[in-house]
Length: 77
Image 1: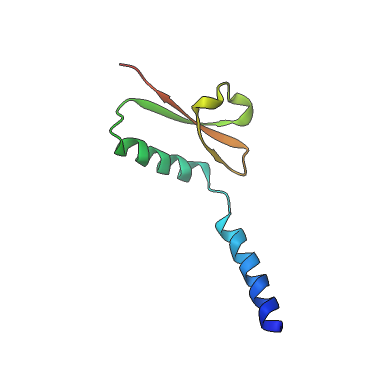
Image 2: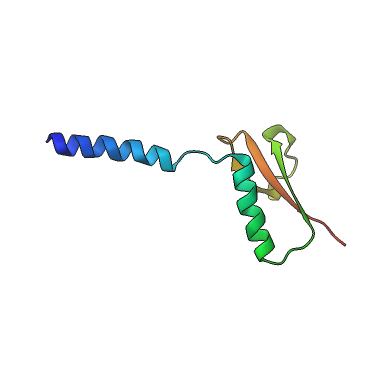
């Protein structure tokens, strides 16, 4: 019984580690790599606070416990 309780407690603690929020710069770098892999040459990624988001369709990521968003804008040539 003690083994089961210990296993449950340890698995609860480890799931919290995996669900930890990513820093904005790290998430932005990951998103940027995916965009560049699609051969998009002219775009802008910007980290903004939630209050600064005017168009939810531009949001491509959320970071720092949901307090900031990463927005994407394709630049026309």
